[in-house]
Image 1: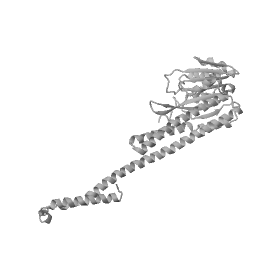
Image 2: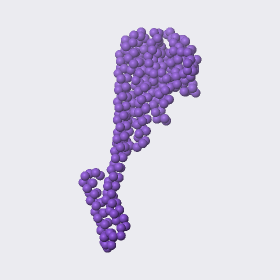
Image 3: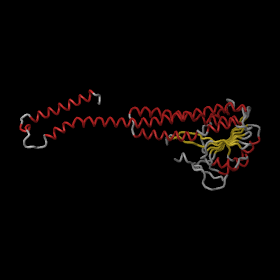
Image 4: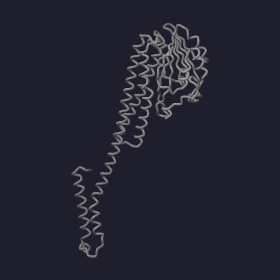
Length: 354
């Protein structure tokens, strides 16, 4: 449940804008990377101090400043002060339990996304908060840890492929959002494969392990829905907003991201319906298997009821029972009991009860 309810503050009741980190990856060092580019030039470097990026605020080029790690509050505070970030924005960057949202502060846009990945060891989907600040000629991105899905964007900028180098910083922000959304399809593809495997297992031989797998998958989809559903409102706000930071030429691409978001949400809802049907299928399968067992036991009981009745009669030990003194009585009784049992078996088969 820690994935659904994240810690949002170390000191409940503290004043708004109090900067405290709640990152669970405190042992990892903070890494900062700067990419500065225009249509004709490109520069990329790793920096040790956030002050090295301050000069990029007022340049004519597009600057992408990426910070991996939220352990150092001082870095966030210095960046916020220099780039004019509201204290509440700085607080939201550090408190990683935010839902995807868009906030317009006139001189910049603050965007919160959930970047998803699959943990192969724990075999579950993990979500990492990505905060994006879109300014006049710069983009700030804050991530919880090193490692992201933005490598293709960096390669496109380095190799001058696509439109990024020719467009503005708003297009760069769009590209980051689009990459995060496209990565959702990879996660959904993996979930789809799991669902197919579970469906095949349900039809062949469902076990208690299958039920646990269904419940785990149901929780994964609930977690995924919680991370993705607010994204529709976010992208719609970017597309229909009146911020001067979003150019009209970028709105076309934002509409495409909106369509992808709707597609992701529809797929999640479809998977949830399928999982609910699988749960019903499991219960029906277990019930049918139990019915088959009970039917076999009932048939055996029905066959032995008359045989038990006959054995009970001749086990009463009355002194005067005519068959007790008969030489062939024992064998005759066995033959009669065998005939009754065989006749009942043929009758049940004729009725197709087994």
